[in-house]
Image (cartoon, rainbow, N blue to C red; front, side, top):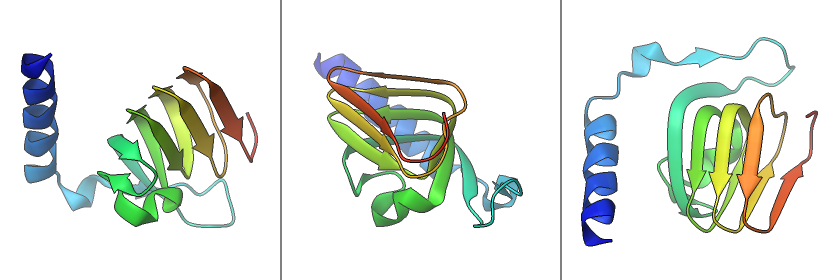
Length: 105
């Protein structure tokens, strides 16, 4: 288990270190402007790679260790307990207890 946590932390650190802000794009299908990220990892709402502004971001891959709240998903979202999406989901959501989408699925 320690190796897994260390590997995950090393992967996230590497991605954050070499992230290029020029690769971000906006989603023009909605009236609000949201940035799109390749992935995000969070422990609880506000405690993750997208911080307190996670509801403004759409992710291709979202991994919520306990629970997460994101702007949108265009791909896969995995959650240990619960996933909540503010806008739309285009893809798959899997959680131990619940998935909530406040926009379109």
